[in-house]
Image (cartoon, rainbow, N blue to C red; front, side):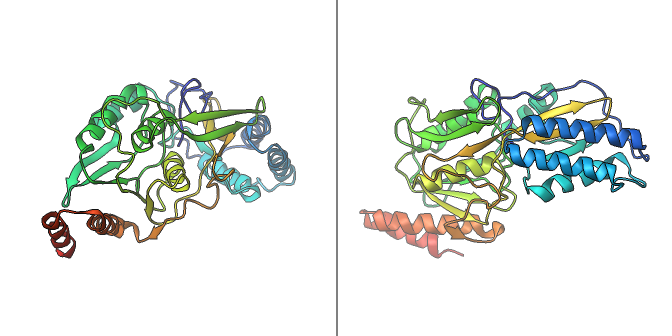
Length: 341
């Protein structure tokens, strides 16, 4: 999800990143361990969770379950943390709120050498950049990696696409990442300096504003027809970019309703308990809508099954370009592309 640093980031990263070995514990855990886990989770939720009233309700519910015997019987560590997650979400269905074991893979972990090595090897998750028929640009981006590391890849991609007549950005498998990359990419898509969003942080009762960059290297694409592909797998920061552009009137969203996670998260690791507690500490606020996509997702302008979204967007782009085109020969070319099987 949205893992970023304080000065330039959405998350104000305060997670504890541990180098301790992660050993799978599939055996049954005892009552003392259960009690320690519940105490730890409740403390983090009460202190950090963005909605204070819900935090107190969650904590009280978990402690009552513990006292009342609801957590008795046989549980492995994995089963127990899954139960705690379900109980927390039963009070508020927040997809960023989660308890996991340290043995489980964590795609949202804070940036570290292992993560960066993976990201570098796969071009910072810029999966594909190409020019489709009809001079329509296409960018598939599966994660917003740290802009300090991956900014040059973004700038190179946008330079390659700069002279296309329309642009499709594919976020169907994008699960989030850092606000710095979101800001950089949107700076190419919007004119001048504009506010993208705000972040209300419960601790300190502060609001942070995030803006596009006043300057970008190369050519902005702020006036070409824009289409953003989304699916039910699009989550967190991927949803943020789609939501911002949709409500700023910049482009059309194509595909499925997205997952609905709008709360950046702190991550707290406890090697002695072999758990990680993920607690949303803030909420996004759009300057246009005054709210966000939490729990409802981003609604597409052009609904389509995820596997058909690219074809739908490409066809819509071609129709739009045909309506704008003054050159009869090029308009005929676009029409041929549109009619092609």
